[in-house]
Length: 418
Image (cartoon, rainbow, N blue to C red; front, side, top):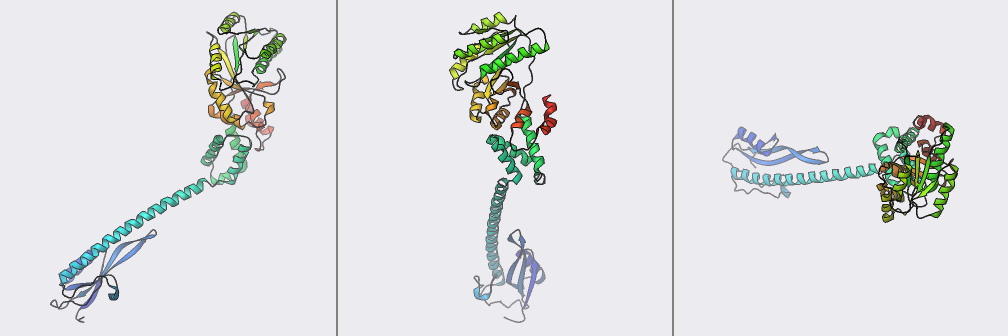
């Protein structure tokens, strides 16, 4: 190469900008020798942002630059060679074509790399989210185990854990004492206690429920409790009438007659459809209380349950209807009973045989989900001492693992019970 030709360089963001600068300075008296792209980092990938163009300034414009030249690599490895016969203009066009092809390739690769980066970030974010959701604080796991030990349902436990995660920061979770007492408060709030319903005489009490839950015994306990309370508070005994539509158990009638004599009452039996309405009309004007015992059927005996429901549809009779369920019932059976006895429009639930159960999580879970209140609980067979109004403290005392004593419960929930 003629040493009268000087190799120079110019910097610009693009190759076109380099050529513009060279052309303004030298006109057409130049030959591009080398175009080099520099890069900067963006995340974990590279993107071309600056160019350096080396060129020969042709001092004698008549001279042709003929040696083999390269584009972006050493002469020995060059994939693109400029023929000796090319004019300066042809050389520039040739290099422009090469540069355009490389620019498209670089853009395609850059787009592909960006797509890979986006996919990796998305997958990593999902993995991180899944890892976080499955990583529980030790104190949350401890609360979960306590709830499982108390037979709370899986759905209820998940609701409690979700609420913990929303309302407790990681730092707050370190205070286990505060956490367990807060969860105890949430459980207490879910236990709904029925309010007394003021009713004009006669007050009609109906107890429904599946077979074996102790409906007749519970009805007797309520009637005896009313009689004893009136005896303590007034010299005038209440006028109590007992009726039964139970046609399945002979022993139920005998039990009712026995206790009716003790509380100075009588029992009548409605054996056919329409009998109950006639009996109610006979006694509604001369009674303060009318207690109605019902038959017990399987929760899935839809036909007989429907017939009993129709028998209880008495014109002008407004009843205080209770659903009786045993304390140790599992959640699935309780859900079935609540659903199939919903047609009776029961106002609240009586939990029977509490002396036979040690855990109440299933009961609390399902009743909370169905928004049902509890009115009474029964413990054993003694009449009437083993029936009492339901209270939150009763169920909270039965919870195991929370480490709270009666003093705390009385101070925290005593005002509510009063």
